[in-house]
Length: 229
Image 1: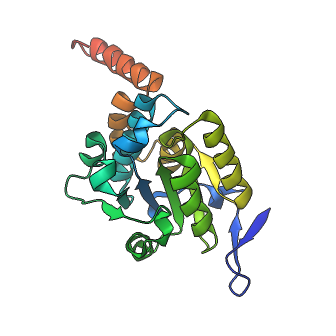
Image 2: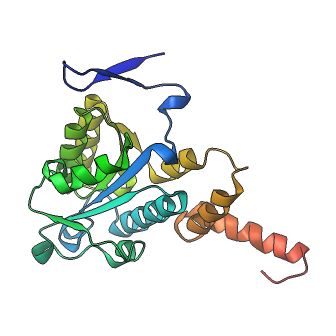
């Protein structure tokens, strides 16, 4: 099995990059959502903004369904705007940590919140990819975290900026992944009925074609049962 060393030379840890242990597990994951605010969306040009809104909300709802601790953070909220409403509505009781640091991993409140979970699979999504995602991803890698960057719940000021940032993070050891892959690894087995039902409720409004197909399947099942779709 191929493995890579992370951390400082005095405290090396070995992290598997292949095999079952390389996949995400809800009990070992912690999600940090960074700067999904109006100012960042205003200069988002790597993706259609509505896609990022859909995907990050779907990711957040999935984390809640799987019991994955989720940390919300903004930068200069008074200038950059509040967290987008759809995302804040997933965690209405949580006040985002408002930072001055561009690099989230330099804010001790965020780092301490992550460390308090005791989890080492760090899942990140941010605006913008080349700055607010790349900085904490690369920084956290040096502290031994397994970092997963959700590329379609993040975006940059241009396609090039986003793609170069993803390459840079992957070269540093982060794992690029999309939000549907994240939630699929958390689910892993459709026999886990409790989370399967909760995940289906997320995919219906946020899963694109998968959500449409699911609604169609429910229509057919209802028709066979004598109901109306």
